[in-house]
Length: 478
Image (tube, rainbow, N blue to C red; front, side, top):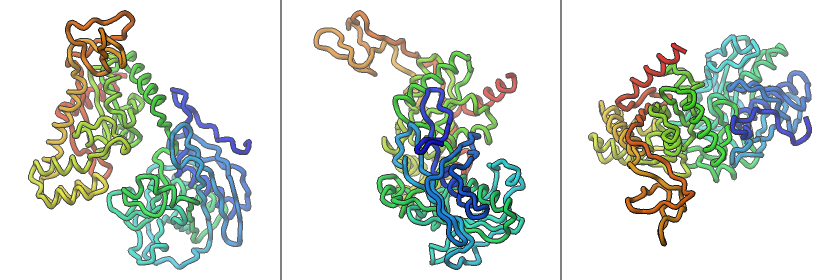
């Protein structure tokens, strides 16, 4: 590989460059370090199969070996995504020496699946590291995995890796912010190399991100309760580009394609979590879903323009609960309102003033739902009310006023300017060359399903179940 070149990753249909996650970087660096330690193999690059099914050839930027330990690093590549972590180095040290004694309570008994050794990454691997020691010595807290053949793996963070301080995230409080999928990838890669070498015993894996503490201050990690550094993330191993103009055009093209294919109902999800829930829990064809990212409102507008009349939106409550406040761009940089929605609708259903205050102090939706669950039936009532409001908000968005619409910035009549989103009033002259669009007249139907990984389906609009059945039946016919 040419120095500085990036591994080949297929571009999106819209031509945008994909990248790879910090989780993929950590797994590749760990694999290279394990090869250096157990095989004395000084690899210039390693291959890595991501959960998305894309095989990466990732360049190893640095490598070092000392007695009983080896370290390697990989440079993060974000593709066309405007990611603040683009270009950072993720380092992994694989060693046979813990450096410091580890509490015996860290030893877990869950086993990696047999699929670990068949050359394929098992997405169903359980992570025994969800059990951790409640030790005052935080440096000793590790995720742990036993393979069943005499190998025990310990995974921990170091410089630049954040630590979770609040409940409701993907990692336990007090533990390193290394999410479940990256943990499984790292454990799997190191276990394969150690197993191939016939090693039995304990192996320690330590991740570091030089400069991670400073970079993390510019992210939402401190607000989420992750302190001291960055998170090791990634549910697919691949970074999907989020450049707004290009992404919106890609969404428009995908919706247009679905309209041309005469899909009776358009499936729409914000991202990977929605796709996974769609496929694994609702058993619907994920390949027919359009990823709308955070642009819920604009995606609905595109669907209306394309003539689509039935839409099923499925997404994590952490994003879609914002719809109850009329928020149509769910990116945290654009707007939040999650806790305000749950506090307000919870109060309307009988939550006390103290409960509302607790919700406003929560970091995640699951944490806030836990507050509502302190009173029997309150969570369910709150979600019914919130779903009614979401339905009304989306209906208003799609039931556009009768009449005609002009493009932004078009002058109409003497000294008048009609901007995008304003209706043409009777008697206003439309000059030649102006772009006008026929508006929908209440024909579009939008149904929504909200979920969290911890609690499953939280709420559905009235007709969502019917659309699930319709899509399922049509898929069987196909």
